Length: 138
Image 1: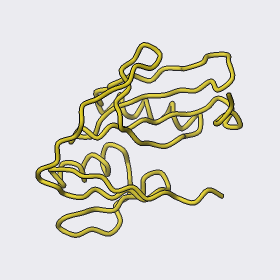
Image 2: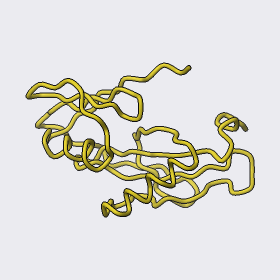
Image 3: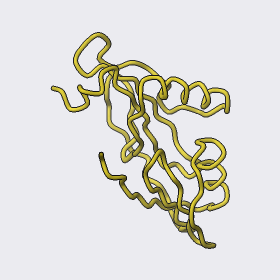
């Protein structure tokens, strides 16, 4: 079993981001104070920390004809969970930086991927591999 990761990210508006991670992404809230909130982020620990002077970087890297936001974080879902999750995001009117699409179709490493940002501009990527055994395949 892979151990869960821990990631802490800055946000300006704690309540707006708390709502996004809880209500839009469906993450269960854990411990919190007036300055931070823990979430169960698909089995991992994500903590949002209020940082009023936070200004996210707006940089990207060209990949497959898309401008991939950097830095970004997210999780690898199952193929079915990815498609179910992306449908829920469309239903909640998420604005995608890169709409869900398939990379390497019919090739080694075939994967579904999508990018969007939280209310503070932190970029997230969710992906799924057609064959999870090819997660690190070249």
